[in-house]
Length: 170
Image (tube, rainbow, N blue to C red; front, side, top):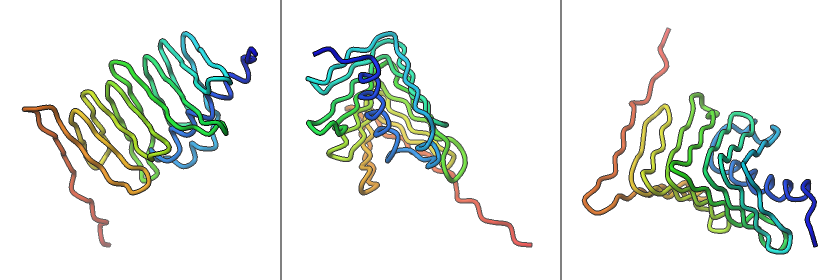
């Protein structure tokens, strides 16, 4: 059975919404229009998978994701199970509720919705106003907030943290 273009886009859209929701910041972005652009789309209801290739750009409010390829996998109930972004590099930017902008970059981003983990691998870097974290692999657990960073043999993880600012007294 062929899937109509609107149905294919609905499959892709719900998956990328899941990518943006728990991971990065600005809450008002969740109510914004989701836009997904790519050179090609291959999707079907039977295999519960959608693949976008070439100049993939996903925007929703202040969220901007760019990748060479994006693969979305859904379960039997059409719930998003995994979003895999690849490219050299994948970039993600979004405004933070606290102010400032989060910027992330890696060769691959793997968001496993079921395991509640986001893995940035291959020259991974996350930068925000309070500091930067870089390594070969950065793992973030969206449920617990736990962060783990590793590097390849002989390499190092780098963390830079700005001091907290204090409010000036009158």
